[in-house]
Every structure is written in structure tokens, then in C-alpha cells.
Length: 280
Image 1 (cartoon, rainbow, N blue to C red):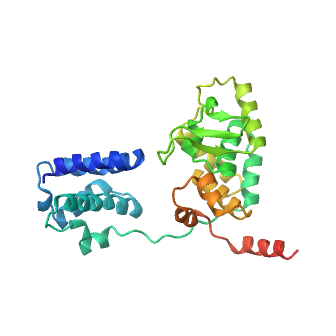
Image 2: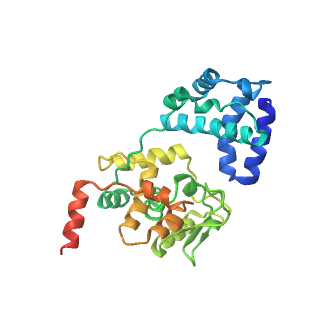
Image 3: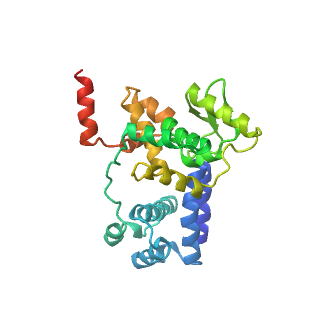
């Protein structure tokens, strides 16, 4: 089977059986694969050709991104070999490719201290920026979700925010926020004259990222938007909230195992404070 036909069949399968984000992610790599091997038979593309392809699209990408992209091609080959009952081997399973594009060793992320996050939010005097920080650091929202929130997406009666373009692709995802934070959002929207269909925060991702980094700099800490989401989940977990609630409600993960890897590690100082707290 030629590459073009194989890609068309596989993408059709993905559209019917996976989430939109998966289709978009796989589609990028498969399109590049099709462009590099036009008219080629799948069986004629060997190990060296796969390595050349990966080098052309991976560039200076991180090891995890390289591993993810070779994983797309590996799954693509597995699918085509299975449905066509072909006899040729999957070139992505060759030892050299496994070695060159292996998954990096996972290390649990370091958790920023709760008092430090509280101080960062407290010292951020710009109301808009402080709300963005709170939505990530208190409720676990992704930065992209925060920036896409419209006034109409917020239910002030139920203290929830509807995610209209969730990463999971599932419709109807909601974020639960405190009544206090809902009140702050309502006051900000009213004062700013934001219409129902307007975005609450008119800033770009890069601007938000710089703001978060600058906020962390106030307390001499390296801070990224995702650190705040991870902080919200970890603090919830350590406040005796069931892991299932942390996973399904706060992080909105499909798999609890993902949540367990996601939660931050404990540094010695924090461990000491927890022990002191338990023995009071």
C-alpha cells in the first residue's frame, strides 16, 4: 500500500475513534511523512529512511517530543500492517530507532511551596493578572483555558466555568471555583464592561507566560503557567480530597495514573512541616 492511501485510511480511523486533539496531533506528523515519501510503498521504507524523516521534522525538539512523533509513525505502521495482514516488519521497532528516540526518564516535578504561591498571588497588584494566576493556582485551569474563557461561560450561581474547547475533546467539561473567586470574577467583568460573548482576559499566551514568569521573579522563583495547575492539584490531594476528585474534577484527566505521575514531589522542608503538623 502506498503512503498516501495508508495515511488517508488511518486518519479516517482516528477521526471515528479518537479525540479531535489526537487527530490534530497525529495529523501533523502523518502529513510530513506523506510529503517526504510521495508515491512510496509502505514496505519499501526502511529503518534508515525513518531515521532521516525523524531528523528532518524533530530538529531541536525535546527527547519527549521526538519519542512522541516516532510513536505516531510506529502506531501508523502497526495499524496498516494489521488491517492489510502485510508480512513486512514495522521499521519503527528496529533497535537503532528505539535507541535514538527512546522516551526520556520521567522525574517527578518539584512542587512550589503553598506559602510561596500565596505570596506571588498576593503581591500581584494588577487585578487581571491576579485573577489569571488564581484561576490556574487555585482551580487547576490550563493557561489556554483561562485565556479562552468568555463571560457567558461562567455560572456565578454555581461557581463553575464551562470549558468550550477542552483538551480532552469531551464536551461539557466544567471547572469548579470557589464562591470567593467567582465573586472576584463577577466584579472584574462588571467593572470592565465585558460583554457575555467577549473573552474575559484579552491577552495572548506569550503575554500570559511572561506575566507568570515575572510574578515568580518577585520572590526569586522560576514559575511557569503549568506549575500553578500542578500546584492546585497537589494541594488538593494533600488536603485529603480523594484522588478521584483531584483527577476527574480538578485536573479532568481521563486516567488516574496520569494524575499520580502529575502530582509534585515533596521537598525536605515541606516534609518537616507536615510531620510537625501531624504531631501537634
